[in-house]
Length: 114
Length: 113
Image 1: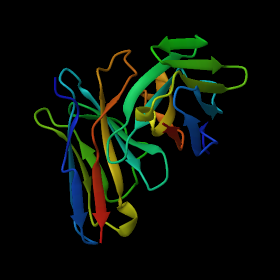
Image 2: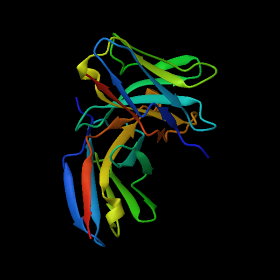
Image 3: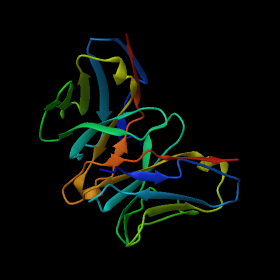
Image 4: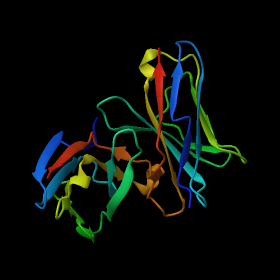
């Protein structure tokens, strides 16, 4: 009964490098959401994906950030040319979709940009 | 534009007493409201939710009350236990916005033994 899996749990990158964050949804879930939590703030929606489709990316920064959820494998959030302001906790959540609004979160990836 | 607000950053309660966490919202179009509990270095854990057509939902020690006219909801924990010490987030969502969650900034609950 595996829950939402995220890896790595901690990621350190130098400014200008790329960060790749992975998320495997709960078994039976095909809808993935990514959220970002800056220090001392609440979680902010970034992007909503279904298999092979980006449904809503209204919370994604316009540049350097991209997300995908391929037919096979985990969902990936990619940040190119990271800057110090990208340091945050990134959480993935999954849901069953349809009329199901409840989302279940993974443990998060803590990104530190040095 | 903060659509969901938790105005109390922290709350301290004695073990065994009631904890009441509050949340206000501005968008009357929200369909569902959810409460999550979060421990440090972990992801949020779903606790309880309520539909906008209801005014109360209960699950064990947790009860959520919704006052639509005041655009206010609250989470009651009775009795409070030391293991309940965590940050509690209120969230809201709409069916026609892909069910993305809009979170408040959280309230840190400390239950004193």
